[in-house]
Image (cartoon, rainbow, N blue to C red):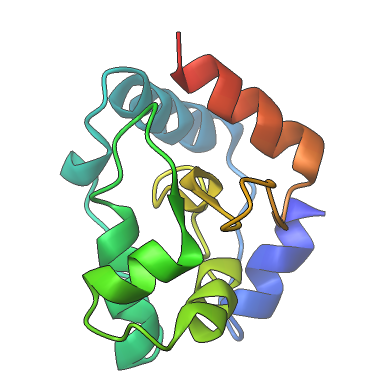
Length: 129
């Protein structure tokens, strides 16, 4: 589940259950996402230099646009690193804000998504509206 994924990613972090704070943050994130302002959300992501380069490239993919892993690899100047890009995409800790759902396989197939292929399909469908 989502909390377990967060605990695995942010080892040693203390998680405090605060419905009001979470609701406010969720509202801000969803409003920014709905208005296409994901890039305005302050992020402090921890990862390798390569992962951060991939995540930064994902932030440039606009709603309604899809790229394949090879496109992202080209964007970061590592054209032979499509598989490594796929791994970095899979390690993205904030999947709606850093839009990893907009990356698909070269064939056009959706590929993997940490929250499930059905949700990826729904998000992509919503973004095309």
